[in-house]
Image (spheres, rainbow, N blue to C red):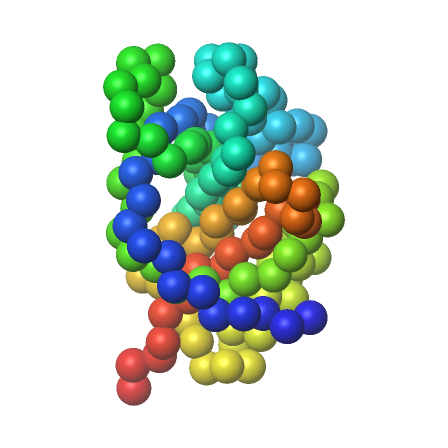
Length: 143
């Protein structure tokens, strides 16, 4: 796998938040969150972003949203700062393997987790490309 370093501009996302265990996520909690967002939007967007923070031992926080500047009263807002990530395409489904490979690549390139997160961005696109693009958020080490 070749993980490409990608610079992300600041983004404002409108969407839904979830927090739970890895077991709940494996049982479909994140998929249901995405389906709930699609139902509220009335249409599936071109690009859907998933943002994860691994900040608890048994699970994580996740936000699913779309880039938007219009008023969407039934949704929450998340403002992401500019970020850098190691990125790889993924065929969809459980992304544990691809993120493990990206973490090994991060360590080999002398990079670290970005302090304060988020830790991962999942980019789901409908443009005929890969089902998902996995983004492991990184920072350069400062010795």
